[in-house]
Image 1 (tube, helix red, strand yellow):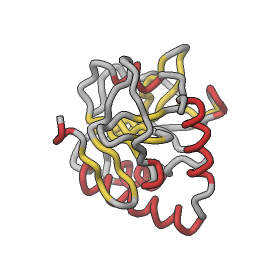
Image 2 (image 1 turned 135 degrees about the vertical axis):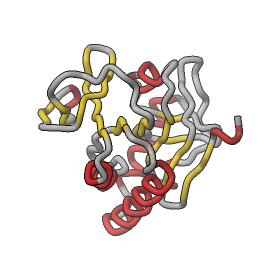
Image 3 (image 1 turned 30 degrees about the vertical axis):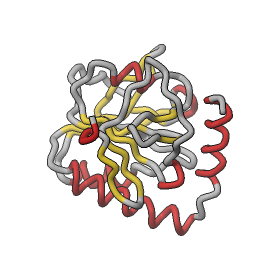
Length: 179
């Protein structure tokens, strides 16, 4: 299957996850994320929209614990981490933080995905924003999603950046240990 066909397939699969199952899955995802990565001091986390695995619980817990939380903002062909704060609709209709971008690299980066394979390569939305951001960054790369997004159908391109881990309602798939 071509990447665009795979994107459509996984968008549909994700969209039809029932509300109760989704709510329970997101609770588990947040628990796994916080238990595995809650010790770090700074986080770059996507602002979930639509049928993406929700990040609201994770962001709230990190902020309550006094952690540095950054959300993405699109600037041209790049995404930049911006400190959590007031949001305004930005590129692609996704609410983005205002203010100056963070010039450093957060310790943990949580990325959205449509699918992920057993080696940690993700199928994103096709803009390449996260692959460009993650290239040569010293950050723990964690994909968040649902078990139904695990796939053996993907084939990566040379510019694709593999994840260190994928967290879903079933647990944590640690790809870093396999490298």
